[in-house]
Image (cartoon, rainbow, N blue to C red; front, side):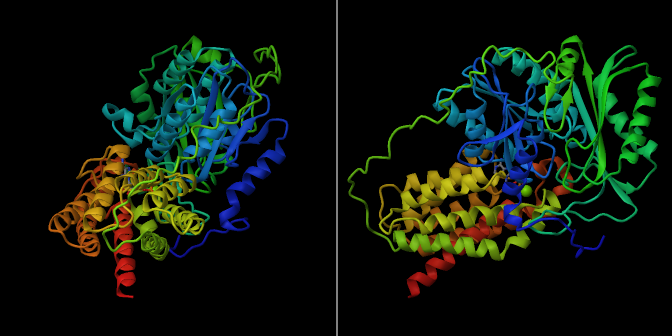
Length: 591
Ligand code: ADP
Ligand code: MG
């Protein structure tokens, strides 16, 4: 596979693939699926949610089909929030799904353990709690290759979602209360282990480029569902040998002994033939037979894909009587049907779905308080908007570089994600009234970014904008001090939301030196431009310093030492942002 290779895809406009896919899915399964909410991203079970039943909300990025919306239906998930390709859905999209799923006794959210998903689902849960909907979460973490057992909480969720969703969905369908459904989902998560192997990459529809490169005769053991590097790359080996390695890793943690029961999922990543998957299953069965472990149920096929990546994963869940009963409980969804349709599905006393799902109109539009705003400083609201507009331009110009950096230590979407977010910000600015304050513009930016972006950077940047805006809420214009306050609050917002520390190899490592440099200038009474230029220089040095660091946050944390030597993409986009702001300010002042 050459670098330039473009994968062919049957698509219309890349920016429309998700709405068009959703339209197709719902049209294909009108007896199971419907769409609810204003975001157009909440796929809801036609006969799932009902009064008195815990709502099961699942979700994640697209590109993993049939996950996630394919698991929506009676007896499984009530609603799925559908993100962009390989990007978490936004809090607004998740909240739409949760409101649709809510039957008045709370909602359980289930998703793969990725920073972006954790942040977005957490923000949605905060919003829903404020509306009076109790929410619990379980982040599925089944991928044994993604972190050692002692750091299990850092592990990624891959095909193990299948078992955890199934079991939680059954428990909710049987009318269990929220705490019990959560406990059972957690028990399923604890009992599930997976490991995969990748043979060839996939390409994101937006970039058309393979998300990693691998030799024609190579495979990568332990690779993640978004092409995150695995634990070892080696020459392609026979199916039995590869399966043995996956099984060894999975078995070593499950503590199985003769007579135990498991369910098995052999999952194809998108372009691996059924023949190969059955070869893998054959070996899995041989290994289990040899240990006298009984296979209670098995699935072989595509259940959690990675676009058109080639490869497979093996998932085992150790069953006890309860988990087995829940696994066997009937469900009917586009991707999975268990039991006879309508057979044994918990009786719906009334189809009485809560009709008024519209979110209560909370608060009011903020009363426009008449305030005396500070007018010192060169950065007027109009100039500020021009600076932000320029960030959008520069991010688009650097998109490929940002995606390439992310391709090396992450999932290759950072440029695409930032472009989506900043273009949404640019559009939102066009709607801003002439006299909008910088604080008002920052709120507008946060909302636009959050609604558009699902990756980790969505909630991180949105929180940054909100905090930064609030920090300068007493000002009309920004001077050096105002600029430094804006930057400082933005940085603190990212830190509070993401909990990364300096040295963890994240955007924080660009923000912290940027803020330190800006504060030093502002303390000397220097101008907004001089302050921002210092911030840009600090960010650039900070960005470069990330190359020497070992990642401890986000997707790349799984790489450990293999992340050393590469610049962090989030630190790079932070630098691009501050550089673009400084550039636009300089031009505006020269006029
Ligand atoms: P995703 O990892 O969801 O694909 P992006 O690719 O858009 O999201 O962004 C990745 C960047 O996010 C990383 O390079 C890193 O700078 C930043 N990041 C990840 N986790 C955190 C965190 N907890 N705090 C601050 N920044 C983070
Ligand atoms: Mg990424």
